[in-house]
Length: 451
Image (cartoon, rainbow, N blue to C red):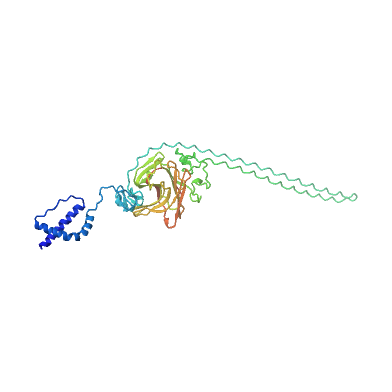
């Protein structure tokens, strides 16, 4: 038993000493307490040295390995699915409520490609009444439009020519004289000449030409949104240049504002909003909408906001159009601006369609929110040759009873179109229309509803 304890002591001493020496630690010589213990230790050292050398070498290699410094800088690598130093996220998807429970009620958000944050376009936002925008200054009263000129009176038709007089009848032949001698019989009385033919009736004079219709009088508002020289209140297409006012159907809409695929689809302008004095007609869901001076501006980042117009569009063919521009640079990815349509209240939720233009990649797309935690992407396309930020952009939606067309155009000639039908279009497309902006700074200059 004592011998075993001595072996154990010697083994512990050898292991500790070898460990310190291998790790470059100064070790003082261990002095045995007496000669007997020293002799026993020497014997044990000889016996165990060969057996322990291999095991100790392996153990020491593990014990003395150098550990990395925990404070050393780790390089940031976006895309390795690990959140490194300086990154907010990396390839992961989180619940939108975990990002900001005060803003979102559901949905999931994926990490942005540059690992700087999450893409919240798929998040379902809370509806809130937000601060009301500052009241815009009252616009100056428009000058009274000139009274239309009275049409010219048509020329009086020419008097018909008098009919020619009938020819005189021929004189009857004189009867033959009786023979001399016996008193001859009295000659027969000559036949009465035929009555002359009645002269032909003169032709009726041509009807005089109808005088040109005088221009209808209208009360102008002093604005000319499209710059065509026609006051907005008198213009049959107030948001598109048409100085000639051509109107083939002779309805309430000029040709340039008709549906290009069917001129008979629309016949009147129901709403024209130049953003002067109709602020009570709008109901924003949040954000600060600055109204007045012939425009409405909104800056919202990083969330989306809606602004609903009060007019209820009945179920049937219609068109909604907005014009806008940007007065600041792009805020970054996922920047959208456009319009809303078929806004309906369903139970305690608001459902809607939207047609949006995304300026960072020139995408035109139709989206739909039908309740739940996210907004559904329906279909998109790329617009060609978009204008610069400070030029006018136009987004317009047409509904013909079975399909929806979302179109884009601008003053530089940029165009784009997306068409959906079938199951993507609900049977009842009635409801309000309005404006939508997501992570963008936008200045709207007009809002028009056609029916």
